[in-house]
Length: 265
Ligand SMILES: [Zn+2]
Image 1 (cartoon, rainbow, N blue to C red):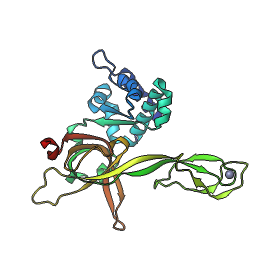
Image 2: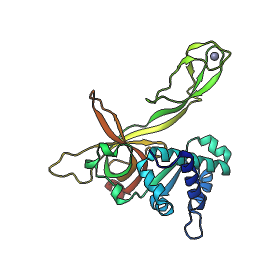
Image 3: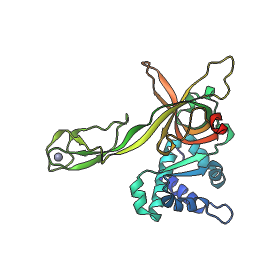
Image 4: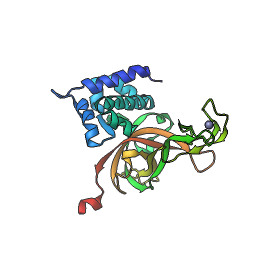
């Protein structure tokens, strides 16, 4: 559990964005203000800035990233709304992506363990496989076949939209399958890649680690790119019954250097 209440977290991140200064300049306030004009959906935050601003907040982010990332993203959206309400509504979901995690939070691919699940870490590796982009539903719009009313629903824990149930319109008795209006629902780009260690110990097998990328992190790298992934360690069901695999849900990707084939051109 985070040591902060959610509303306090939101207030602290808002203060950080509004008042963090480098010299005379309000670094994040200026960046946020410029986001609509640049058509950006993500704000990049240097972890060191947060650490300098509020050490306790920065350390709690590493321990409780799910709570923090949810609050900080909603805070970002609220601030963008102040500058450009129309843009904020059009985009819907904004991201705060952290970079430059401390050395002690860089975990070797071989050393990621159960104790890291749910924590924010950085892991370095070489891109070994890139899968196709898929689409994940983040908000469904259902239509009742009887009263024709439309309503928004959130996906369940497995990411599925339940299309059956009682119509929420109190004047309607319908109970059954609803129509999913795909063109009105919201989808998110999603892509999984594999990374392997940069140096494979001669006495060990290589280890491939799955990284889940969403939205503007999708399709930004090539095979053999050396990257630093900042992300939350997750556990997911494996294809083998009864087994679970560790993977990383990326919050940010930093390119260490381009793949060799790029440098030659
Ligand atoms: Zn109905």
